[in-house]
Length: 86
Image (cartoon, rainbow, N blue to C red; front, side):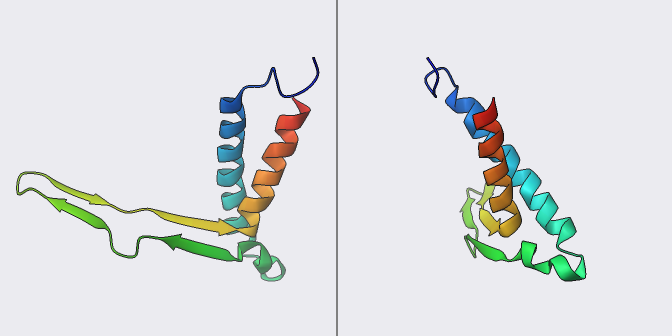
């Protein structure tokens, strides 16, 4: 029984989420070094203007922005490799 049958999909999701966050931090801080600027290269997408629900008593703004960088991709790859080793 060697394979992904015994592995938990939630664990993979958490590993991927952690890889994205850690990769983003690495990309942000290491990308400030002059010869490592390439790790911050990426694309940002999301809502330019937030969605607004104004009910006089309740005011809700919804906005989402996703930034994918080389650092976060490296984090995702690392998370997948760690997950496969477990």
